[in-house]
Image (cartoon, rainbow, N blue to C red; front, side):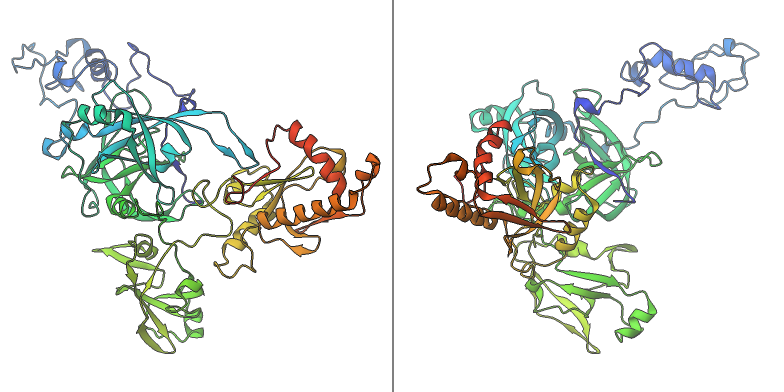
Length: 602
């Protein structure tokens, strides 16, 4: 979002920053401003570079002289036993510890809990939205995960997205085990992984001493100490970082995902930490690490998916229809902070809430456009759309709806016609937009080759191709996505002319990235509908050519295909010429078949 740059922390070799000034072994860093050069030199020489030694084995582990007023060559080290041979002119001040350890070891998760943390190594391939008949080359990445109940491993969805090979290595083991993704929830960036049956017994025997983690029953308190565990970049062993809870908030995830409840922490979260557990002070999992803010002016902002969201995700897994996406916000709203707006809708001073501007047909029995929504499940909404989370902490009200369980009713209280009333309870569900969001979740890669034109369903993934996707097309996606299911003029999809292949048939046409609105004057409702009309035209051409012996006459006819484009001139093709050009186009571009539509093709 404009005010936040959240980057998933899946690590791959390409993430390495070649400009990073890595410290070379044996080369001391320059002293910090205002610090003693001797203190800095001793800290480096005696302990060594990071990871080369430990405080317990260092000769200066106990304490160090304050050398502010002592000549560097006369400053002695302080032995661990406290005996100090000091010259007469040297005044020894109170010793200061070089490194401060965590005061309470009881707050740290036990080593047996560490055994639940796993390294996930993923090989994935991606569909190319511009060429949905092919995929990219395979890419290797890694992330983290941890063992939960039911012989399952929880991780982030972006870690295992498009995985074709998945290996799991638990902490403390050198062996990697084959695994598979059983539940994929991109709406909350969570996924469930299970070990392949062929090696499952070996895996669970190797982690027999690891008890599945417990999810926290409540959100962590502000400034509560937390530890993030995982396998981030910089090594292959487990990494533990510690920090505090800085904030509990609701933020917008990377599009096309919606907002989600998050916990912000200042513990280091780096590429490879994604999917790893974040433990609270009681040793329970407070959440799952998943992204960080990487803006140059921002420090120590990492985000965690809280245990509350994880619980809701797990309850939506394993149904007969697979994973059920989390509920959508079934209305659009406006803040009621403006006094003119309040007077226009006759909202008295003692009433707080938000103005409902549009309502999905699915909840029309409970809400109407023009209602003032004052409460959700009895919890009061402020004029800026926030509710009380706990104590004096506030959060956006959509948090209440996004975390609804399957079948859980929702009661809206509205101010309508001068009266505040509770409306009949409704059950919320996912309301998919007309431009689908996630490949292999709410849509599949489909395409149609019509002569020398490539057409695909318009999806939100096309927004990621910034250079090719014109601003007008972005506006079209945003405008149509605001229309609720059942209010889309009978359209199931928007069809995009994505590529005009170079060919004599299309010479002079350079109109890719346009929405196809009509086919020979008939409104196009979906890619399937367009293919049906094209195949009907082909049948007319075949029928017309029956009995013709001249091959030249077969390549031309008086039957034409006219594609009406949004905000552009039509494309007109001779139907017979398009049929003749199609096999050559398929061969040139290594396209196996002329079309693929899920559910209609084998």
